Length: 385
Image (cartoon, rainbow, N blue to C red; front, side, top):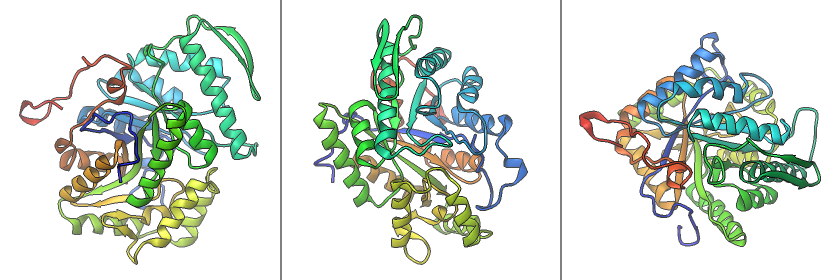
């Protein structure tokens, strides 16, 4: 499957293992319910992030939503000085902030983190707008171009469809001087694939069968080659790991035990991306699953009944999860963003059962954005990851 996939970090025998900070709500014991104690707030979300830092995760996604939750950049800026080793993956909605000011904000936070900032580029419609796919990705292309000019040149000099800007850039330079923070991107339309191939560093996919993931990776590799580039590949997926497969499957059933179909439909359709091509692919996968929701061994699609976007989880015992992750890495996936319900519990369980057995890396380090001499996280017995 890997023959036609060109990977930027081909040399790596490890992967970036990341967790998820639920700053947009969604933390719960039962899908379809929203307990007050899990409501998005500084205390809960920052505790999860700082726990992930202590446990040895290499990055953490801080998402963005217009419906609920906290402001992403404000949250990232506040938590940044409290972290030790973990990178922060901040979601940025292109068009939301005037690009020169966005460049300044990102550069400021990058200095606070000493280069441990990464960016998740989002191209969704802004509230009250209805741009087609090609226009949304063109706006993102312009935003990215302006960001890169701000970070690498003495002047922004850009004329485009959405922006016409001519400004000096001093002192808007990030800590990461080799092009600024890495850009992670997820999108399936031809315009989105083309944007990632030309400008971004890590192509993030939602869970699908290995065959369909391989097709996405091959397509992206071919498109990136047209720009004389390679990208790395990432997978955003939920996680349920327990000492036995029976326990993991039991937790999956418990998670869905209070959800009815009408509530699940309501949750899915209220998201701004509910009609996107990526979401439709998640629905197609659910339709291929067996009666228990498994579409292939240990890949469970039940979560997609209660949320838009990433709609599947790896479910199994530690050895099964490790074997599945190794298959993904053999395909060429170099970054994983995990989450689970509730997020703190699953963060700790994955760190206990699986994380010590994985070789983890920091992609900003591996791609030369920050020095290799970063502190490493001690493991039990003095081993260092």
